[in-house]
Image 1 (cartoon, rainbow, N blue to C red):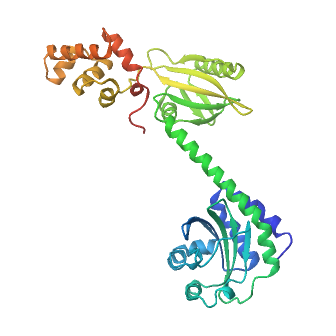
Image 2 (image 1 turned 120 degrees about the horizontal axis):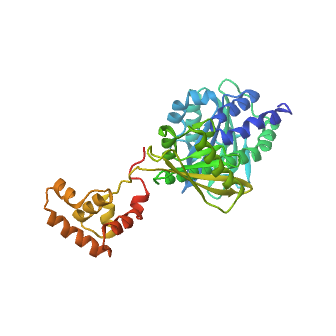
Image 3 (image 1 turned 30 degrees about the vertical axis):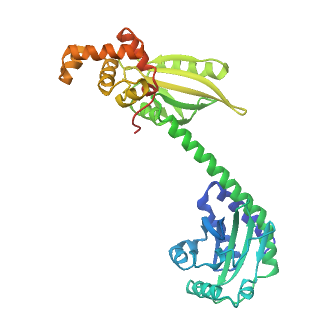
Length: 374
């Protein structure tokens, strides 16, 4: 093999950690350089006396014929996955170049070679890498069926040289995947709140927003997103927003509030709070739409406060601004019945007036979260 090939390969190889779709290109480079029929990387987990595939990356030819490969090879008939026939590597890495000779008399391996022949694949070489207590990485290389050459010692040395890079690339891919998963969990969690959340960097550029914040930016007459910046429709509002962000940027322990938009036109309430992740300063900007009512779930009010379903419906109606008599008429009950229910609510919750009830309900977890996320 060309001595400089590994250095040419590594940039594409490591790129696969962040862009899993790039595995196909990186494995194509190995396949073409070594004049092979296929190159496949598998992560295998030990499950009793079996190895099960967690994920697989294929070169472009193998990807094109993936369905046939999975039907003929990647199944329970594959003796390579049976630990009673094949032991996983004891050393950190092992290269097997003579599988055909070692398994020549095994009926199961003969059947495997016949199935590989149907795929146009011949002699294999296998790089096995230990990856934790119960996981193994494998790079499986096959010559084309009409190519009877054995794998050379130079090619084996290349696989040994590639081993730490393969392991590191997969490790980075795992860590990036975990971070992306955590980010998705955090994003979905913040989508439950009825407040828009925007994360700005130290320069005030928008880096992330939850679903409600994006909806507000899309429909508000007062502020919108222009590229990575927030733009207000009026000069006065823009100045106030810029000042909030600037205060939060310069003063690391403050909370800075403001309002943009005229009172008669659903103004937005803003709260800017400085944050710091490592050495990088940032700002969280919370946005709340004035005049937008928060829906309450009567079922949740039952569970939170121990009210009956009828009492919870009345409590929610009062929270939403409905009068007792109006509620009674809508429900087809007498005002006296509604007032008896209200008296029971007051007794159970330890309040004496409707404003106290409304404040109590408004402070509940039900009022602070959304019941449906678009």
